[in-house]
Image 1: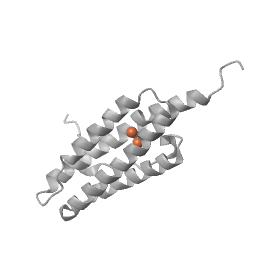
Image 2: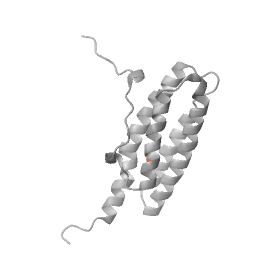
Image 3: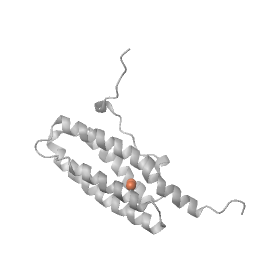
Image 4: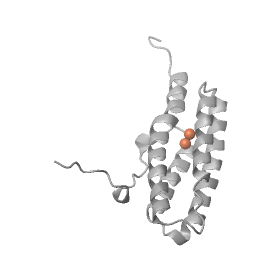
Amino acid sequence: MKQDKISPERLEWPTWKEAYSVGVERLDSQHQYMFELGKKISELRPEHAKEIVQSLYDYLVEHCAAEESHMADIGFPGLDVHREKHVDILTQLSAFSGGDGAGPREILKLKTFYYTWLVNHVLNVDRQYFEFAQNQTRPPQGV
Ligand SMILES: [Fe+2]
Ligand SMILES: [Fe+2]
């Protein structure tokens, strides 16, 4: 029997929910907006590609800086590794020209790439500093 493949064209964009919270209001709001930007990509028309890719890139630069500053504030030991992941996403994103040559294929590539990154990063990677902060503030057991 032929197996159904997930078609990126049909990906339903997830919306941010409380369960994705990293415990910092400002960063949560930025994550919410990043999910909204994802929706814009899924509805993207080639003529708007350049503008959307640029605004996504600019927003991620701002978000990554805010997040790194938070991780430094709480003394998160995984800051350097996390920062490398941020550099990596920004490098990969800058490879999407979004220029005049952006056709449906490039947009589909961007959509799939951003979807995969966003869900994995917010739910798994960003959660690490949240869990670290929670363990720091939790009173020792038996006290
Ligand atoms: Fe984040
Ligand atoms: Fe992050």
